[in-house]
Amino acid sequence: MSDLTDDVTGGPDPVLRGIRDLYEAIDPVPSSLHTRVRFALDLDNVERELASVCADMGLAAVRGTDYARTITFECETLTIAITITATGADRHRLDGWVAPPASLPVEISSAGSRRQTSSDGGGRFVFEDVPAGEMQLAVLPASGGPVELVNPVVTQPIVL
Amino acid sequence: MERRSLPVAGSRERLEPAQLQERPDEAHHREVGQLLARAKTGDRRSLDAIVGRFMPLVWNIARAEGLDTEAASDVVQAAWVALLERLHDIHSPQALVSRLITVTCGEARRQRGDRRAVPAGPPDPVADLSADLADRERFRCLWRNFIRLSPRCQELLRIVAFVDPPDSQMVAERFGSSTGPNRGQCLAQLKALLAADPSWSMR
Image (tube, rainbow over all chains, first blue to last red; front, side, top):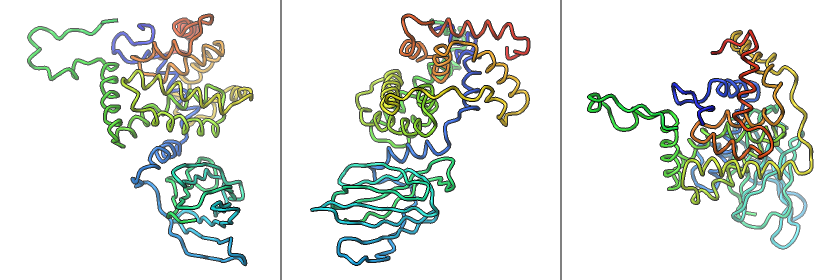
């Protein structure tokens, strides 16, 4: 172990310390990753002080059938719109848009489980086969895109 | 291994409990042990502190596995979720690091599937750095010599560099192989290269 430990301080070997500094400089942990992980770990809990909760603006548009409805969530940083289509007994398809358009991780929690997808460059995302009951969407920070989210954006829960 | 200096006779009564005489590696284990115990009782702050502390290691394992930044981010997130699911089974700081390695490597391999590792980065990533001049020179020199090591040694040293000393032995063994060079040999090779490089002035 002595070859990895500095004899004087008991801290890491200075060359290893240098390698660490180097990689921290050339390949840093993306700034949004900690928030994203934090959010993933917290999601089962009520504690969500980081997230900005977006309000359901009501039925922004009702389609011509009884099976589809569109809901818009207005958030400070972005708008999330979803169209819910019944696809079977207690099953729904969710077509969503994020505006301004950006490719971001989108997570759905429903019936005690979570699934993740990403919106495409046009801001579109889809969740198939979503069970009836309460569900909640979250848009998570990602680095490098046109929309720089610092914290996750979470929608109010809605009932499908 | 036992190199801790004993307190000088007579000075003992002035010293506060153990912390003051602790070597940094011992302090590290004590702190992580406390965080772990509290996180297991559901304390989010302690869990958050653990995430912050080990995030660089988890990230660098995922990246050393050859994943691009997006895939590595997914792996890191999945690894932490997997860790949390089994947190109650983890009874020591060393077991925590070991478990993190297991879940990160597992998720990385799952993510990578059959795809080959991405090619190495640009030849001189240090050139783009905004670090100040002295740091940049030091980085450039270190990088120049580092990339002369075998890929195996580079990967091993990269990961070991993100582990605090008390766990480095265990981690080096996890990533080492019975046939290839071990971390001591890799580090000795690098030090020999640096010693022969006139612009190396860190020590």
